[in-house]
Length: 301
Image 1 (cartoon, rainbow, N blue to C red):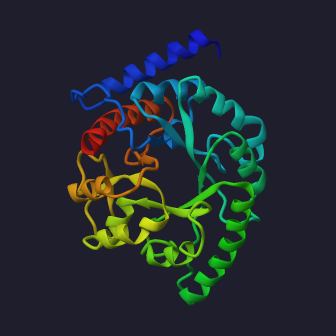
Image 2 (cartoon, helix red, strand yellow):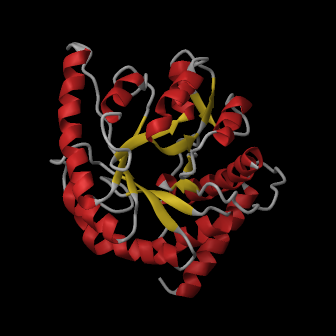
């Protein structure tokens, strides 16, 4: 696609995004606080080319991205060596970086794990989000946690050799290792946080912790590698994900975040628009990102 056509498509997409932004008046993006890099998970922008995505994300005022480089992601694991340098170059032209590479990796035996991490390291990508470990609740949880710990030990050794950091995201749900956070932190805390750390997801932490999430936030401070922002309405284990402008995320979280020593990336996750495909998916997610990044910057100012 020619540069002119790319610009035309992007202009059209962003215009559609504005039109679909629920008619709200959105303030212009303000400069990011120096302390944090504000990035966004680009899962729903996959129909765009690398250049189109870089243009769109820069236009919205983000500092970088969290990019799914995994099975069915922007780049399939077997294509990382050829494609990831092109992606990074496209972002660099707009002053953007990949600050978190979201992967399918949770062991040294994951497909293309070592090659993916070496290429990422060579390109200046500092960390990757691991894939999850899951429980089979028909078996003893403690035994499965030991098995996950054995896989993690080997993975951390490879991270140290390559010089890259893994982050493990807490998720909500009865099958996820890390849903209560205590379990995965018990494994992660044994290692240098330069090699393995936590990706603290406040949305999932509130689903599982409800009023106890400040304990979990306190717990992970020694091994905090990234912070994920998402929100929901409802509870009872079945959250309805929504814009951070509409959900139940308490101001206390932003207060604790600003009072903490954390200075790594903050990743905004917009994962509440369902059943969309193609251009409509891209346009509506860009509109949601624009609204939510403005709100997030206000909360962090």
